[in-house]
Length: 118
Image (cartoon, rainbow, N blue to C red; front, side, top):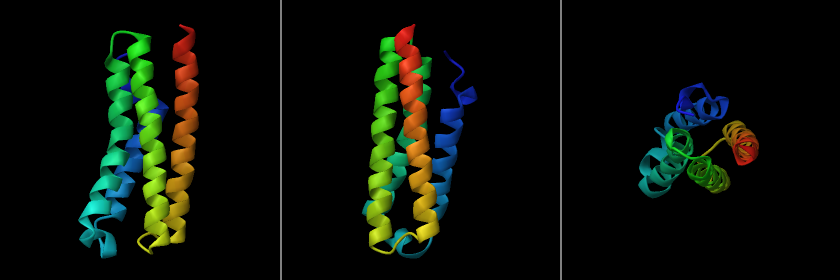
């Protein structure tokens, strides 16, 4: 505990948040403040909750935050689906975000299982 920046799931989710920020700073997304900001907040919530959870004193507290991060991953994917369907995201960008969200969610499930055993 306490070295969240060494967790692969934190690195992957931080990289996704940076990617989403870059993808939403131009074009139609840059003018749709509501969806853009919601998409960004959900993406940033993933590594933020992983970091907060890893810094807490008990596995029970950590696991709660990892579940929140998992929910934020699903929220990020939902917003990507909507953005793709209204033409804000290209197919390549959408599938990249989808793949990353699914991978992060799977990694979080494994982290939760691991912390549940201790």
